[in-house]
Picture 1: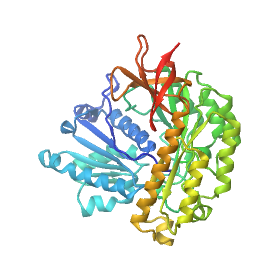
Picture 2: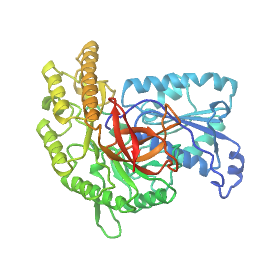
Picture 3: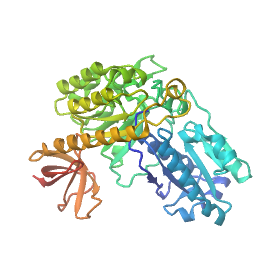
Picture 4: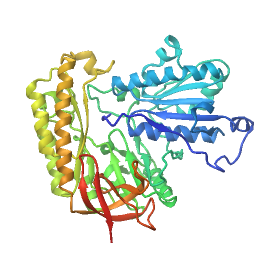
Length: 474
């Protein structure tokens, strides 16, 4: 699992009139009961919460934005870093007064942390009523019934087949313009620092037909951008049981791009060992495939990369960056960086800084190493870099990335980009926000007749390290 922005996202399912077409007795009982979902961690967790919402909605459960009126609270968790787990624990304790006020309230923990810390939640701390791992969401109605009967509901079984391909996610975004499509689950990479293979199981890919069908449905409903999600999208490989033909990621990417030229296509996350020239050429040949690649480096030191079991070295990574620049000249690259990994020296750290300068990342997700129990690194390597050094190196990396990002954005002033309007700017309802193909957020003054979902041409007039500002031009 590559590291992504781990800020909390509140994911509340919208009530959908007419979404429950037929109700049996259980559903008639359920329809007056409300659920509330919060999600922590990566984009995959956001996507999983939409699957959970769909399953609950199919059972007749309603939804609420108000946690006070919820009959069920679900928290979709992340185990990628210790800080994420601490945030979840704190949030669960916040629910205790609600439980005291409403004893029948059901609290459930979903996702990666649920699988890893099931016994602690259910036995030691008595924090939750339900624990469901990433492959157990179909079982939630049964787990809820167990909880209603006074038992603890638990299912953390990891499947080799579950992809939820037949479930149409209940879209939780508010803009109705952008959406995630999960194309695969699990991970076969064994990066020594990562818990994902143990919490999400082995890698398996969805049928390409169901992915294209989902993208088509989204476009017909007014969505104009989809992001194909996987722990490692480049290793997508679906075997058609009827023809024995294999669809790889480059082929899938083109199939989704062909849904409609007005549908933008993004993807995340790529792995340096797997991203191919075929994928890059497909991006170059299809204008609606966004010219942006998130390509985590983790470290600029070949020695550290070997200890991380990343299966590539510094030179391999640079080769992939050079291929991107050659095949897609207008493509930008972002990254994940871990500092302070086991045995990391000042020289190793300097190689990471040098890589950042050379690769010219538009942005990065940056963290210091947090040892995760059960991982190969925790078992075989000593976490021997002092915390104060980890933090000092992280601050250096953040400062450098801010400088690179600022320089990156300053170079865009005077250029004009096609921008997909996503909605109102957070700071002002008089301003729109949207992204260009290179995934850069742009804020610009509203003009009459334009709305979310429209494409507009925007000329960049000023820039910060995080945002471009401009005006709509004809």
